[in-house]
Structures are given as C-alpha cells and as structure tokens.
Image 1 (cartoon, rainbow, N blue to C red):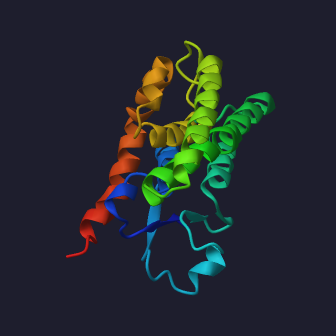
Image 2: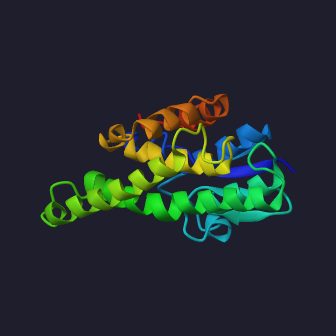
Image 3: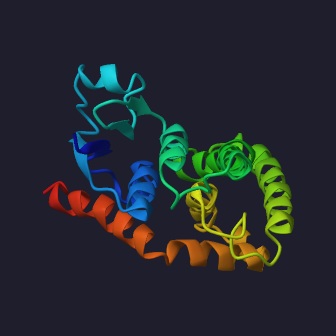
Length: 215
C-alpha cells in the first residue's frame, strides 16, 4: 500500500509552508519513498478523520501496516526505517531521537509561545508583560543550541531526522530577527532548507494551497 499522509487542502497565507505535514513530506523525500497526500478540508474535516487523528490536526500517517499521528512521532518512526534519516547503530539512533525530542520540547515550546503572542494575540494587554519573558527564555535556548552546534554542519555531523525537525522549528524563529544573533544557526538553517528534499516537500505542500485557494 502506498504511504498516505494527511494534509490540508488550503490554509491562510501565514500558515502556508509551516503546516506540520511538511516534516513528514520532507522525511519521505529524503528517504526517496513515494507517498500520497490525503487532503483534508481545514473547516470540515469530517467525523471519520477523528478515527485516524483524534485531535483533527495534520499530519496523520498510514502505510498499510502502521497508522499513527503527530509529526515528531512519525518522523522518529521513519528514521527507524531509513538510513537517510538516521544511522543504523543503536547509539546513533538514540542520538537522533534525542535531537528530535529536544527540538520539540526544548526549543519549539518557546517558539510556539512567541508565535501565539505575535500572530493570534497581538496588541492584547497581557502580551506586554509576557512577551519579554518568552523572548528571554527563547534566547537562552537558542544560545544553548548555538553552543551545541558549534561549527558543525549538522547536529551529529551528518544530516539526520534531528536536523529535519530542528530546522522546521527554527524556521518559525526565522520570521523574527532573533536568529540573526546566532550566525551559526542562520547558516545551519540555510544549509538544511537548501536541501533538494526540503524544496520538493515545500512545493508539494504549497501546490494544493494554490489549487484550492478561495475565489
């Protein structure tokens, strides 16, 4: 059975290129594995979709034997299958899983807070007190990540699923001026997103948005 990945038919401009099916598309492109996108209407997902993805989000994944959801979990699963995403030895796989979870739990938890303030709550009174603390926490995490990366091309010396997830998280910071304070992270992000597999995944996500754009 061809791998199926759920994705939205269309989302508003601010979300285009950032919906998290991009992570799974990118992983499959890196591995050279074909897949089909199961396009979901963001405003009318249908009751049946909750059997596949109980939170009505994307992506969800199925390959005939495995059915799952959550982008980080799917990418970890794929990394266990394909050497393009992870070394085959136990120690190498463990490091890749560690970086995937670090990206989601140590970095993204802060980028999401900032995005929520700036995109969805801009101008609300409470954000004037909260935003500086969010910025301070995020800067601390970015400095720690910058120190850990150092002058390496990738987090573990070669591209892995850990870099894939980390790059998608850093892209959200790239909308702000924060990343410019960490030159090695800027270069690292550019290196990741210049990969042909990323560009193919991005185009695959954006194409349905163009085709299904509201009149």
